[in-house]
Image (tube, rainbow, N blue to C red; front, top):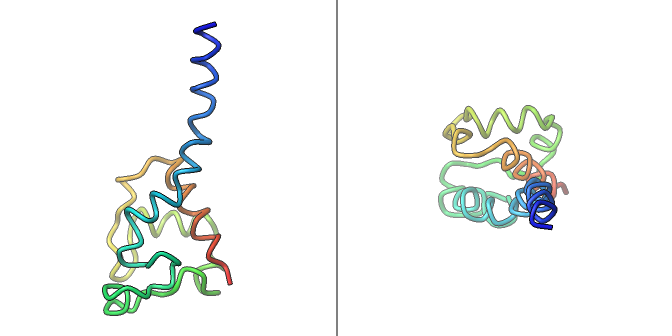
Length: 100
């Protein structure tokens, strides 16, 4: 029985990581990008952050968005080493949710 519970718990980890996407975005990204991804924070405005729901961002592939998170772009620093692959996927899903 204990093994079954352990297996189920391990199997649920990717799901839990995906569910943490909004919380992760709020904690690590919203300071510049804003709660809605619009870049409407004081920092976002001063850096002229492109809204994450814009066609410019949404036309990017998931791999391209992941690369920007990992390596940075323009004034955005490289922050990808701070995230696991599952967290990166969860962040991309949050960014996709901002599509207009």
